[in-house]
Amino acid sequence: MDCSSSSNEISMESYNTGQNMQQKLDLMRSSVEKQDPTSKEVDDVVLKRFLRHRKLDVEKASDSFLKYLTWRNTFVPNGSISESEIQNQISHKKFFLQGFDKKGRPLVVVFQGRDVPTNGKKSLDELQRYLVYTLDKICARMSCGQEQFSAIVDLKGWGFSKLDLNASPSMLSILQVYLRPSSDSNDATEHAISLFQQ
Image (cartoon, rainbow, N blue to C red; front, side, top):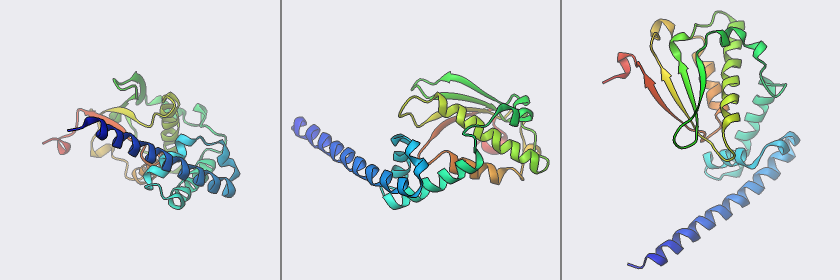
């Protein structure tokens, strides 16, 4: 077997894929900047996430990105969430950044049992802002080009009595919008409730 021809094929395929990505990225950037000039501030890494998620379909990727940008500008008009907006959530001490995992991804530890179910719109709004705040903190620790983080979730003290049915749909929606396509996380769960164990 001729290994050199095999490696040449792989490197050519890799080159063509990179070249195709760059062409699609250029088209997408042109498209989104025409529709929303504020998108000029967004780096290529973010746009590539949307392109990969939409299998390099520029139109679909542009549409998804513009929806994300609109949501972001509406939900976080000042560019970041101030700790003064989420004091109650911070006081629960349920989220901690703990360095990096073996692959250099930010490591997050979450104590889900410390969560207190929301009570009313004001409380739900604060919880949503807290989620965005924590995701911003995680993303700020990612190195350039990094798209993943690891999470350890401790479920000790958490159960169905603490399941917040009012907050769950909106939290999942924020995660879906915020994490931007293909921003994966790895997670481990400690003290899992028996429903999740075999």
